[in-house]
Length: 350
Image (cartoon, rainbow, N blue to C red; front, side, top):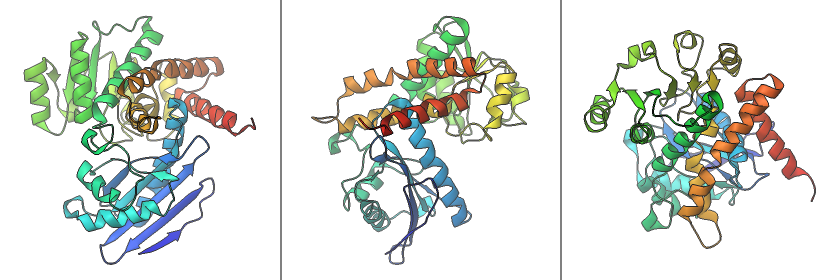
């Protein structure tokens, strides 16, 4: 196994790992540990080139710093990626990844992300204790998706209250793009609150289940932005809010579970100019990491405390909206200012 550090300005440590015996090619980026050890998921993708993987891990790890700072998890920001075919997983590959994680000496804690399952993380944990988000029977906090979905609804209600003066969603029409583990649970929670919900996804079986079992409406992915709605919830891969899509969006609020929704930060300014209230994605979808962070509580994981901390997403969003309105800036810039202020406060000598 060969581990090579990559100097990157503004990051505490970035490293590449290659292991000829298992075929592992991976990157770990630790952006900032001011607030605590860096926690961020491990994803496995068939990147076109290693430069693409490095760009991804750098962007994601920095985002985790801001996400954790705003969410008050007591953690820093990091991320890891494996370059490879998700169809060719092996236990040996993940054990090698575990040795790579262990090389960071606890400054990086890994968890589930794209194309990674609990059984994969169990192989990682054979080589390092610095693994979170495992199942309850393995001492973790379990599947984070229901918590992430609930946190997204907390965020949606906070945004609704800021825009319309009430968090009641029963008279609102919500359009959800992407109804996987998180988006599907969001649809169910919204229907329980009486909201009208229209869903779309590349997987028709997921759409059909929500239509048949929960009374949702459906629309094709290609036509979904033609739907007039009050709240738009992007829940697929990132960069869906861009120059092409913004003119089509009829919603007054954008609040979804997808990561990196804005193609470029400047699109936050465009949304502000259009009068669309954008709830920054890493604030909205922070409940998963909030839940996982509660594995570090004295005495172990506490679900009641996790739910109390998830409720803070609402006040944090309100603070971001107020900063944006006060300073005349986009909400995505306001969220960064809030995160940077919390980091700066933590760096002050006590």
